[in-house]
Image (cartoon, rainbow, N blue to C red; front, side, top):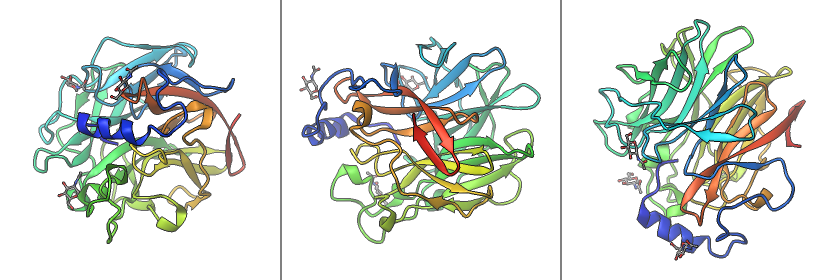
Length: 334
Ligand SMILES: *[C@@H]1O[C@H](CO)[C@@H](O)[C@H](O)[C@H]1NC(C)=O
Ligand SMILES: *[C@@H]1O[C@H](CO)[C@@H](O)[C@H](O)[C@H]1NC(C)=O
Ligand SMILES: *[C@@H]1O[C@H](CO)[C@@H](O)[C@H](O)[C@H]1NC(C)=O
C-alpha cells in the first residue's frame, strides 16, 4: 500500500478505463447504501480511534502535505480533515518519507500510541513498523528511537494495527512486505509478485507490553497469501478485533492499484490462530460504486469500519465509512 507515483497513476487510469464509473468524480455510492464517502481527499489506509468524549479520529497515509494525516468526527458520518501533521518528526532509523498505514490505540494511562510504516534509511523503498506516543489523540506523536518490527531480509514490515485482547493483553499485527522483494510482474497491478517463486507476505502477531511499544518474545505468523485462496500477489492491511468469542482478522488481497483489491476476513477462536479465511470479498470493486476498496479498519466495537477507494478521477484514495454487523463467524455490511 505504498504511495503511487505519477507514472503508476497514468498507467492505472488507463488500466481502469473499462470499469463502470471509472471516471465519475468524485465516486459516490450509487445505491442508497451504508458505505458513504467520509473525506473527498487523498486519505489512504485509514484507521480510527474513539475517545471518551465521544469523538472519533481517523488517521491516513502521508498526503495533503502531512506525514500522517488526521481527521475528526463527532458522529462517524461527517469528517473534518485537521490542519496539522500528527507525526511532525520522525525516528533516526527512517528517512521521514513515505510514511503510511498509521493505526492508533489508547493505553490504560490515557496516552495514545501510533503504529506506522516508515521507509528504512538502511534499505530505501523498504519499510519497518515504528511506534510513536502522544498525550492527545490528534498528536503530535513523538516517535520511538527503534522500530517495533524491521525484518528487512524478508522485505520489511508495513500496515501495523494494535489490538487489545479481552484479558487486556496487547498485540500488534502487521504485514511482512515480501512483495517488495518479489521477482517482478507483467504489470504494475501485480505489485512485483507475480513471477515465480512468489514471495510470502505473512501477517504477523506480536505481543507487546502494556506500554504498547515493547515487544514480548517473537512474532507468530497468523495468515499468508495463497494463490488457491484467490489472494493474488499478497495479503496486507491486517486489522484484528474480537467479537462474541470470535477473533476477526480483516485484510486486503491483491495489489492496491488493481481492481481486485478488496476487504476480506478470517476468523479464529484463539488469538494466535489458526485463522480460517472464508475467501469471500466483504467489499470489492463495484460494490456501492467503490473502486479498489481496501485498507479497512474496523473499530473494536465491531459495528463500523473505515476504508479507502480510488476517487476524484482515480487520482486519490478517499476515505469511506460503513456500518458492519458481526454475527457468529460472519461479517456483513448491513
Ligand atoms: C508527506 O509528509 C511530508 C512531511 O510532512 C510533507 O512535506 C509531504 O508534502 C507529504 N507528502 C504528500 C504527498 O503530501
Ligand atoms: C521488485 O523486487 C526486486 C527485488 O526482488 C527489486 O529489485 C525491485 O525494485 C522491485 N520492484 C518494485 C517495483 O518494487
Ligand atoms: C481524468 O484523468 C485523465 C487521465 O489523467 C485525464 O485525461 C482527464 O482529463 C481527467 N478528467 C478530469 C475530469 O479531470
